[in-house]
Length: 282
Image (cartoon, rainbow, N blue to C red; front, side):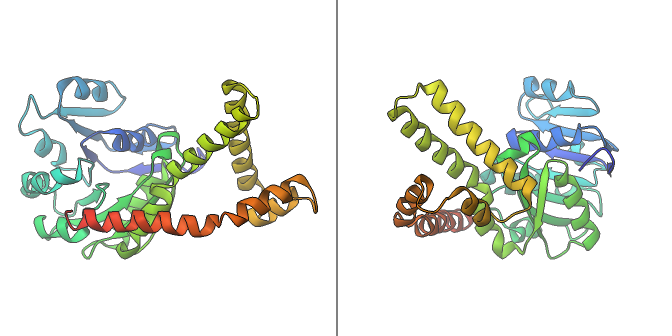
């Protein structure tokens, strides 16, 4: 999204304004985004006060007003459910009859299926399940979006627009959403882990922690920006760095022997198995 592509959104309610909801909220406050109103609910008055200090945000605290969630959703077209997964069913029962007919309820709760939402909410509202990731905080998210059985193409487009304010959006069947989470959802942790390990190696080579951090983090950032700007495939850019019979070729050979692809297969497989356990309530 750019200033040349303005975004207009209806009234939005965020139920549970934690880190992920806060990241999406920050996207709505960027230049070029207009909303008909933003409402948030938090457990404490202190957190509600922090949200209320943001331009255009009306905040409610459940500790001071038991009807906070119902007040927030009244008349809202988009309702983003961002509480902990275990809290979702009770919250949905609480707000079910306060939702505006035609509202779109958007889940960012990991492991809670569309079926769970639709079994509790009235037929007059639709449900869309999403899986954003933590780079939403800096406007670089990759968000998976899955339609529910009652959602329309217009509903889906509205949710795509919402999440486009914090990065890229991929529309996938719900059956693929858990798999997506093992790549984009967990992916930042994989990158941070690689950065940790390469930084440790740099320190072992005699560099100070500050020097190592600058080298490694700058290299990851620069390589990512080069990839984005070049339009080339990663394999092609790797080949350009890997001179025949050179040092990089020797290093890549060692990494290839480590069977990184197979390691990532096992890692994402373990994450996917755990996601399915969570969906089953384990």
